[in-house]
Amino acid sequence: MDDAPRTTWQALSHGRQYLRSAWPWRAAGYLAGSALTGIPVLLVLVLLATAGATLSIALVGIPLLALLGLAGIPAAAVERRRLRLVDDDPAPSPHRVPAEPGLLAWARLRYREQATWREFGHAVLHGFLLWWVDLAALAFFLGFPLVLLTAPLQLALGGGEARIGKLWLVTSYPEALALAVAGAVLLPALLYPLGSFAGARAALTRALLAPRERELRGLLAEVTRSRARLVDAFEAERRRIERDLHDGAQQRLVALTMTLGIARLDVPPGPLADQLAAAHDEAGKVLGELRELIHGIHPQVLTDYGLTGALADVAERSAVPVDTDLAAGLPRLPESVEAAAYFGVCEALANIGKHSGAARAAVTARHTGAALLIGVRDDGRGGADPAAGSGLTGLADRIAVLDGTLTITSPPGGPTVLSLEIPCPVSNP
Image (cartoon, rainbow, N blue to C red):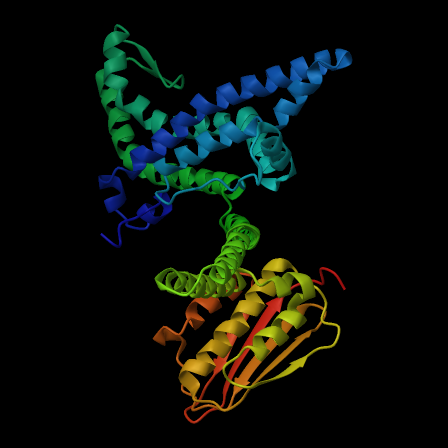
């Protein structure tokens, strides 16, 4: 059901339904399990601290003290799992994934994270205090009424005399039955504060070990970094493919074309000469297509002359005449930014040539010191729709990976204006 409680506190708001549900016993199990984790945590902390401090004189204890700082990580992982007893919402780990493999990279990252020290603080608090408090609350809210309920049984086992809860001396069954009735009344009444205490205890644990806001910020930052790494890896792979094709397959095709051309000169007219001529022409076409493919993967002009030269080059090759206003001295920018801007302008000019019916277009580019601003404008019919499969959707996704924005203004009748803004520092003036 959609309104089913997901936490102990939510279950408490349902009134009497709380007593008929499993939440009181889940709360009791959560508090009872605190000792099962608190005692081992206490022993580990004491042993590591004692051994590390004792052996630090001989430098042997320094690794133990270093390990002490990481002792809260496994304890916190167990506590986040235990939260499921009183909170159905998952509590994922706030730790980031190391950018490099290996134990050293993992340890270096963990020591720098605030989450590691929050977990260590929780381990100290849990081992020295919290599990004692949890057991005391459990003994009062649940153990005390259960002891009263068993007063007649204790009297029978005690041979006519029993001290109930170390407080009341009972010598008759009417007294024992009165205490049992009191326990039966107190038990459901005390289950409510039991659930409240377990909910507060779980909230404290979540605040220290899985803070939602910090966790989301950390995960968002990690996603942003991973997207940036993917873009960089993608651009590096494009350049590697471009180099392999340029230095390998293209050179072989050039050699083949020259060989076929020389062979045509040495063969007298006839069927063989015609076949060589056809092969020579076909090799020339393949070479031209390969050069266009290489240029589309990663244009060499972008590497050699930067974004200014690459945009001027693509403007010259455009099917529609293009006026360029490229800021003088446009600095060298990160490769991923230059590539995204270049292919964005290529896609825009290709769409202008195919769909706009424009007679002329214009490209502007400048760097403000903090961001790259590019504009592409045409005098076509307008009405451009990025959702119509023009390639602009993929371009917007590519710009978004770099935290950039793409906006299109294209009223019916034109003009169409495409604007790119990519925040980026100056890589090389």
